[in-house]
Length: 166
Image (cartoon, rainbow, N blue to C red; front, side):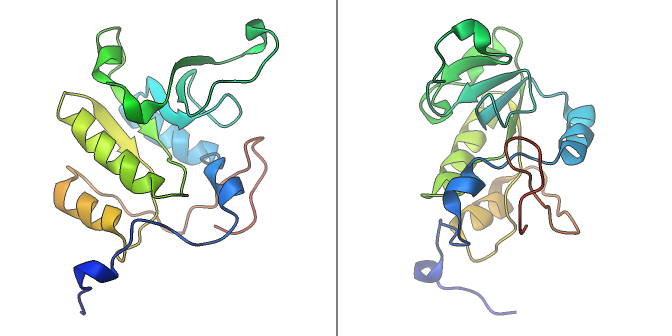
């Protein structure tokens, strides 16, 4: 087994179509199985169109003419720059995260999840298994548990229809 030198590692994925992949929705059967086990309170990297939780941290302010149009509740904006533990004080303890894959976001969310877990939060991340990345190494060294899914997850578009590729 060969090892990578540190400078060969990356924190980014380059597998095309980043805009669509950033908005990908977790397949409902995978989410439901994890939710049955962990009982998620908040999706920390979502929007109204791709979250499977009733509450989420939005990556951007929802653009709606009438806030009453929102069918799911954005609790806060920008999950990376707030304390999730504040939400544990109002009953949220378990967080789901299928982070956007572009611009090094996976590593950012992995680090944030690790920090939040140190305050008592339970965080479940759904991320690619890529040993050439810095985030994979960080998870391997710090996660309390790692599960590998087989076959590869085929994500959905925000509307729930299957996405091309995996």
